[in-house]
Image (cartoon, rainbow, N blue to C red; front, top):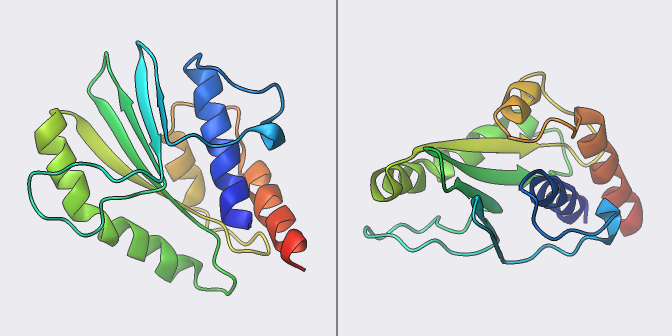
Length: 156
């Protein structure tokens, strides 16, 4: 549940940033598989076509800016234990092949952004540097922690 809350909050922020249709409140946002306008192409939980056979090709969110050389593979996790570092590394390694493939196919500087917030809100200091890679700057660490905690409370 925390994972879905974080995804919802992040996709809502991206939609708002890129001027796509969005609800007024982020908690009412229902993530869409594909969102597109003249400026951006955003996917959620959608497999990416690749030339090479790549098993891990369905990240949580992918952002392709159409007018720049920027593409982001965003992977989100809310582990229920203290394995934040392990989970963060796993997410980055898991999508290395996809990152290289999309960089070559799209001719864009593709980066993998790993957002890991432990179910009880624990984060690593490096998370801020990952958030700084995102085009949206009105979403804070505290908001991701809150979304993760609210998801944990819903389970209880």
